[in-house]
Image (cartoon, rainbow, N blue to C red; front, side, top):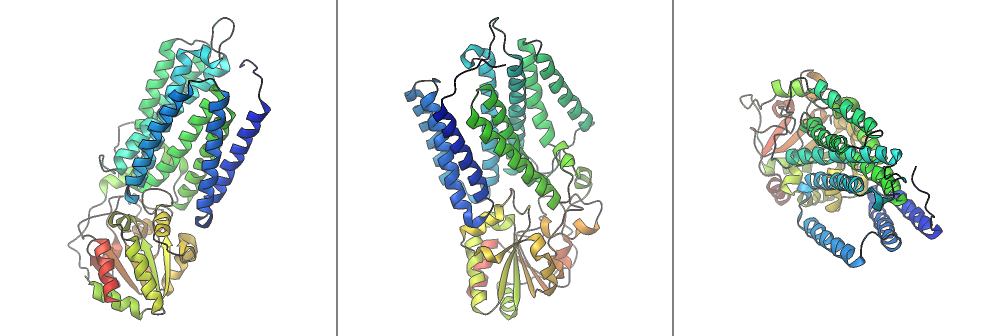
Amino acid sequence: MHEATPVNPWVALAYLIAGVCFILALRGLSSPESSRRGNRFGMIGMGLAVGTTLITHEIASLPEIGGAIAIGGVIGFVIARKIAMTAMPQLVAAFHSLVGMAAVLVAAAAYQNPEAFHIVDAAGQIFAVSRVEMGLGIAIGAITFSGSVIAFLKLNGNMSGKPIMLPARHFINLGTLAAILGLIGYFVTDQSPWVFWTVTALSFLIGFLLIIPIGGADMPVVVSMLNSYSGWAAAAMGFTLSNTAMIITGALVGSSGAILSYIMCRAMNRSFISVIAGGFGAEAAITGGGAATDRPWKRGSAEDAAFLMKQAESVIIIPGYGMAVAQAQHALREMGDLLKEEGVKVKYAIHPVAGRMPGHMNVLLAEASVPYDEVFELEDINSEFAQADVAFVIGANDVTNPAAKTDKTSPIYGMPVLDVEKAKTVLFVKRSMGGVGYAGVDNEVFYMDNTMMLLADAKKMVEDIVKSL
């Protein structure tokens, strides 16, 4: 066990208050109305935890730490100011990779200089429990780093969003995971460098192998899952550093990320184990797909759309990633306001995995000051499409595709979708008929008799509709 060290009661109290702030932050972030307050609690808690650690631990000179914080803070501030909302998912993936690498570096530093971390016995051997903590920390951190790099490349378009399948992938993945766990167990009895670095290398490898086979339709779950991994990595390193704040923070992030991933899998009718094992529905994604542009479809104009919506009693707006790319949320809110002035009942329908990360569409609509009481989740609004006069789909493909309900060969089969096809009229904003959704499959709604395709840049189309209104 670790050497017993006296605990300053004021330090324990400060970490306790920080932990309470983190819990309040999670509670606040559960609702758009309280999200700002939640963010403030999180900032206060983190500031208190970091400040307490710097004051009470002899980890380095304050000028060195201050310089490092200043450099990192400036980089983070510049990136946050410049990043577009459309690039937020890949930014989150990139941040997760940094957390994972930090865990790897801390574990490596503890292994190379265990005396500085007070984790050695009288014979100079690392405590057995510390070896377990170190092994788990570096394994989870390395998996988080390499998995997040692949997620970033897929989300950023540097790598195909389609599943990349390896022969015997499940056998390879299970074998690699078993080897990692076995070596961590062996590390308890033998702290040789080859054991430590082999665990590190295999963990980096399995991170790549786990994420490569996962297709675009499941990418929001991947982002949430990697968030959970980063939390558990931080918690493991908190034990190594004997830092209560890190343990609390990591456990909160890890558990909340795992719960969110599970909730999203249920919303998509996915098996959580299948998603994290990689390649769910991949065979269908490889064999299916392509836009069948030779089929008959109807094209409309902004004037047509404005006339139909102005005459409607109810309009349900379904935003998707195409809206985010075009930055059309502000024009969309203006369109909704004009329709409400005409006496039209306007609602927004949000699919749990619309966009590239959890809550992506909610954040964009909140940014455009869309009232929270007009935004509804799938399970709350899906029954209303049959009574709606117009379903206005803007840049959402996979989450409105009826193939998820009928085509067992589709990579999105079984995923609950928004029943837009049941509306009297479907107005579908799309850049062109040649493209398909992130899952790579065509959408039957395009070719239905009650659908009118509005082919243009989403923002330009909505602005033209606003002018016509």
